[in-house]
Image 1: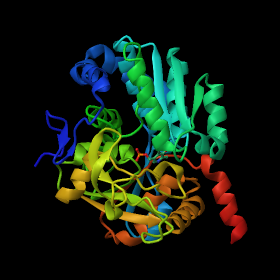
Image 2: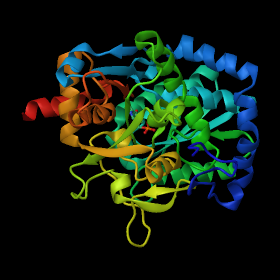
Image 3: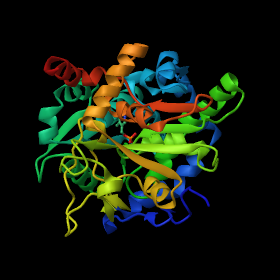
Length: 394
Ligand SMILES: *Cc1c(COP(=O)(O)O)cnc(C)c1O
């Protein structure tokens, strides 16, 4: 069994490139060039230099002693929260901006929901001096004003999507329209392991630095390069794909993906795609998707902005189907509780997204001699308003 993408762009039954005819040349250009460019000596040097000196990698693998005592096992945190801009998203945007430069592109477009991918994209555009246009739903612009300010400060132009629910999927439509109209000079930076082939594979490769480092760091710490469990939260699935990547074929490692149950699976306010979804097409690929009887996308909900995506990357749909990864959920309340516990026990304020992964420690029942790695995908500064609201309501 191989869990990587095949030459046709599929993970089992999922993936592919379901794009309008007008977009085929753009996607083809990427498909024909991405591996050649990524694995060239020049690219690897520039990518790794920037990951070290600009992002601050390798991110530490930290043995959380008090959290380990609490759960009576060994819990290591992979500290993606310590990256420049505060999350794992920068690993991917650095990779894609270098690729765009190699392809001779001068203009970058992206879409963003909560604004985190928009900020990561605006950051690398400033770094490289490329024009940056970010599409964002008008509703999201109102809800996420600090991130809109950050993008503008970094020199990006934020264009509101005024159609439909004025959220992420509408921003995606605008970005696709832009790309069709500007095929020659523009690269579209997608922020997770979603979109038409080769995006899911490309993004997973950029994020795979996470598990490459975990292997090396565990080897130094416990003289074994794998843990018993890796836990990661899943929105589109890029931090999980990166944390799982080098362990996909190592069956000694249980891979655990945590989706957002929101106010509860059956509440109508949730983003638990694997529980509530069925196969469908979103963002140019076939995958699991939350949809109505007649195929309309259901608006997802989670307390964490980064997890309220109605689909999931095709790699994860396949890991779910094959049983290679276990998919579980955490509610808003469970995530908040886990976030507060980490603050109190370790002095680390996690992103609400990452708190969903932490919440599963409550149910894992790992043995004392087992080793658990939790991918701490981001820091919680951006979630302070939500945390304060919770403190005041208790
Ligand atoms: C965006 C984000 C996520 C969700 O995206 P994935 O592609 O599923 O990783 C998770 N954690 C943080 C901190 C994020 O910013």
